[in-house]
Length: 217
Image 1: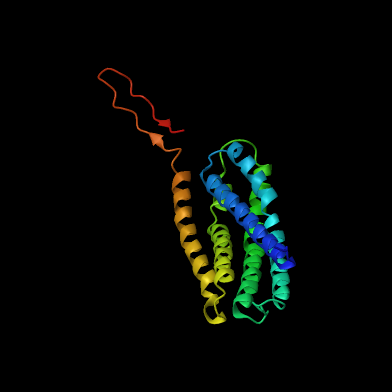
Image 2: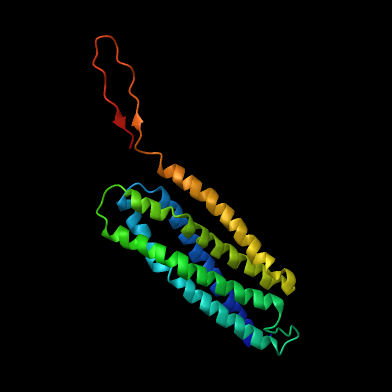
């Protein structure tokens, strides 16, 4: 058995895709915990994770695009005979371009603003304006669109459908991602609003002073 250039490039292509999904999973988990955090002390380490990992995603996307183009080039000399004019390849390229455009224009500026505000905010409860930034639906939707779109692109790469239907894979999975985003955002908002309500004290007995209400932790 010989080790071929195409096999090595395919290995690297798959490895980069796996790394991207791993980073995306960590960032999604970070969003969830940020949305439920009550104090600045809780969100500082999460902001550091987001600050270090998020810039890696566009780099991995470019590497993925480059390795994919190399595979197409190598495909000219195999029985598969890949061409850049194939519909499923055009769909893959378009998906990467659209996702990176959305992430760069709508997601990255918002996460950078969150990280900077967390850095400047003193310890204490999470301020209301920071909470709204963390629970911004555009940021959550774009993050889920990116993950869903790339997952749909994996389906396209595996099945290689015609261009007439290939676009349905990333668009369909991205739409599912948006639905999940709205559901998860609603849960995060509900969890963030649990604390701080007064706790009703029991009625005093005859002759006792009425106790005061206390705030829930």
